[in-house]
Structures are given as C-alpha cells and as structure tokens.
Length: 340
Ligand SMILES: Cc1cc2nc3c(=O)[nH]c(=O)nc-3n(C[C@H](O)[C@H](O)[C@H](O)COP(=O)(O)OP(=O)(O)OC[C@H]3O[C@@H](n4cnc5c(N)ncnc54)[C@H](O)[C@@H]3O)c2cc1C
Image (cartoon, rainbow, N blue to C red; front, side, top):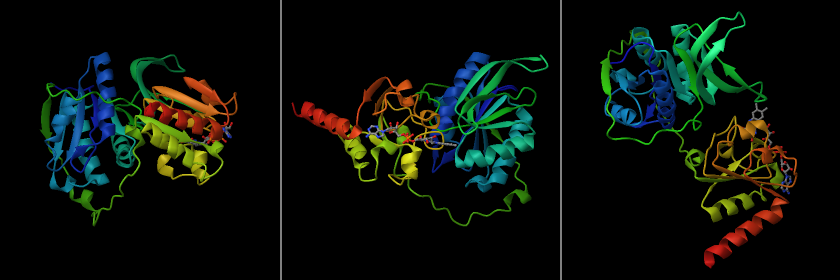
C-alpha cells in the first residue's frame, strides 16, 4: 500500500501519450525509492486517461493516483493545481518531482506555493544525501537538488531541510528512463479531482501546437558546430558530416546567436540536454554552459584549432586542427570506407 513519505512524480501527458520527461523522472525516482525503501507514485490528472497508468507502472511506478474530470481534459493551471494539491495534502509525499517543461514550469511553482514548501527549478541532477546546517543540525536522506547557478558558473546543491514535500523541476533529457517492463505490477488509486467553480475562470478557446522538426534528445549521433565555423554558409559542413554519419545537427548558443542556425538546434544549459552515443563538437570552445548539455554523451570527439580549448577536458578523443580541413577529410574517409 502507498503511504506518506513516498516519492512522487507528476505524470505529464499530451495527445494520449506520457511525456518522455515523466518516464525519465520515473527512472530516477525508482532509483531513489529503492535506496530509501519507499514507494514510487505517479500523479496522473486528466480526463479519460486511465489507460496511461499502465505505461507509468511499466516504467517503474508502484502507485498511480488518478484524478479524472472533464474539466481536466486540457491543461489549465488552476484545476490541475487544485487536483494535485488535494492528493498531496492527503498523502503527504516526501519528494515531488516535475519535468521542467512549459507545463511543469507553470504548475510546480503553483503547487509548491499552495503546499507552502520550497521548489528548486531546472535541476540537472538529483541525489539522496545527508546535510548539516550552519547551526550544526543534522538531516538524513534529504533530496540534494543540483543545478547550475550564477549564469552556469557554479553548480549549486540545494536542500529543503524542513518543509515537505521536497520539490524540484528537472530538465528534460538529463535522467535515463527505464526500459518498459510489461510484467511490472502496481496499484491505481482513483481520487476525487475536487475542482471548484473559481478554478475554471480560464477557458481554452483553441490550441495550436507547432511541430517539432528537430529532436536532439532522441538522436544517437549529434554533430554540433560553433562559432569556429565562421559563417552560416560554412555551417553546411556540419550538415554534411551529420548526413554522412546518419546523425543530427546541434550547435552552440553563440552559433545560434550569430545566425548560423536556428535555436531549436542549440545544445546546453539554455538549449537541449543531450546524451547521444556519439557527440562531435566542431569549432566549439566548450564553455561550461555548453558542457552542461552534452557532457553525459557516451563518446565525445572535439575538433578545435586551440589545444587549450576547454572542450578537450570532456572529450574522449580530440583533433587539434582547422575544421575546414579536418571535416572534409573525415567525410571523404568515411565514404571511401563505405564504398570498399
Ligand atoms: C546564462 C547563459 C546561458 C548559456 N547557455 C548556453 C547554452 O545553452 N549553450 C551554449 O553553447 N552556450 C551557452 N552560453 C554561452 C556560452 O557561455 C559560450 O559563450 C558559448 O557556448 C560559446 O560558443 P562557441 O564555443 O561556439 O564559441 P567560442 O567560445 O567563441 O569558441 C569558438 C571555438 O572555435 C574554435 N575555432 C575557431 N576557428 C576554428 C577552426 N577553423 N577550426 C577549428 N576550431 C576553430 C576556437 O578555438 C574556439 O575554441 C550561455 C551563456 C550564459 C551566460
């Protein structure tokens, strides 16, 4: 049975599917629940969404709190917050995690404020650990919430020692989801949504969602370009190398700001966090804000003319040289090998 002190995640869904970030939170939540000997619960709010509970259980949840109401069909801040806060007040979770998506960034602060607890936004790592306050008070098994601070120049670890739940939003793509296990079992507890008239003040007249054309999060190979390319025209080299390797194209923020490529290709602290099997950084210095979004890649190759470039500090293989010479050689060699 579920109980107080459990670990919770908010199960975000859209168009009948659980968001990838919610599955990633379940992966991390499972690890923490096992280490603390607690249960992992997902809060599923919506209308006609019961079948999604199965996906959540298969990816690690023990318990699903399911609140359904026709007014919850489309996301709206007030009714969603009302339903979630009601369940949280009854069940008193120890930890409550949201994805740092537009919905999570809107909803989590509302829930935290209503529950009168703290919230750390945009975490890039979560751990369980002990903490001693400046007054020497000791706390055990707190949620250590890790995120870049001061423009990404330091990595801060934040704790909420006194208030519960300990709440955080977590960036998409930084945690690993578990493989779905169709044999996993869990309980679904249906709870009332408790929506009040005043929660429905905002009416959704129409929804228009732009199609995402770049999906770096799922890419196995990413070739990224930086300011070292020199121009938008030269950035074509990155597209050619990515095409040769069957990969996707990423970029540094400065390359985006210089107009070489669109923002949706940006990797890093204020772009997408990626963890592909292979990441090739071309003409990218490796600023801390860029590394924050790619350092978890399985293999990193850096091409840079400056042997002191910080990118070489995280690269598994480094090529010191002019990318205008190096990249065409890689493409040529690759095609030559494939033809043989
Ligand atoms: C709050 C905040 C958030 C940020 N978020 C992000 C983010 O999400 N992502 C991000 O990337 N940045 C981010 N930045 C910016 C970051 O600090 C750096 O400015 C940026 O990453 C630098 O981009 P770059 O490496 O392309 O350019 P530069 O730092 O100018 O590096 C260019 C590199 O190209 C090399 N080079 C030049 N010519 C050649 C050549 N012919 N052949 C080979 N190498 C060559 C140079 O040696 C150099 O190392 C953020 C900054 C702040 C303050």
